[in-house]
Length: 136
Picture (tube, rainbow, N blue to C red):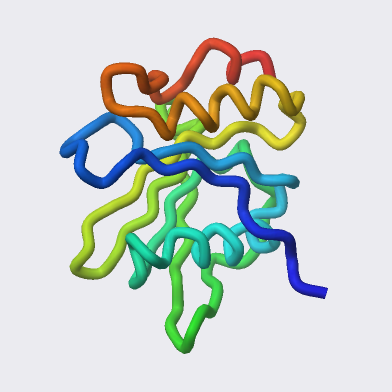
């Protein structure tokens, strides 16, 4: 049975530079289980992702790369405090996608509010690490 689709919300493309490109609410802390559905969801805008950087404390240890559509996507772990609730995905020739990561145990109502806020125009977008995330 294929994994369920990623729970992700993206800001409109026409906004220009901004703090984050959207938000992602993974179901577990198993990055390898969660990453493929996310990459598929991002493919229409970032179809050639080659590198992913996540905070080491947010995810269970695993392999440092995955295979998707015949290419290797490298996974890098960060220990920088400011990246704790973000994932940075780099696309070959397509720039980068920075997403706010809503921790898996977040209650549904809060997570849905964060996802909705991250998909709004720049002026009403959440900061890279809203206060609610520090509680999880």
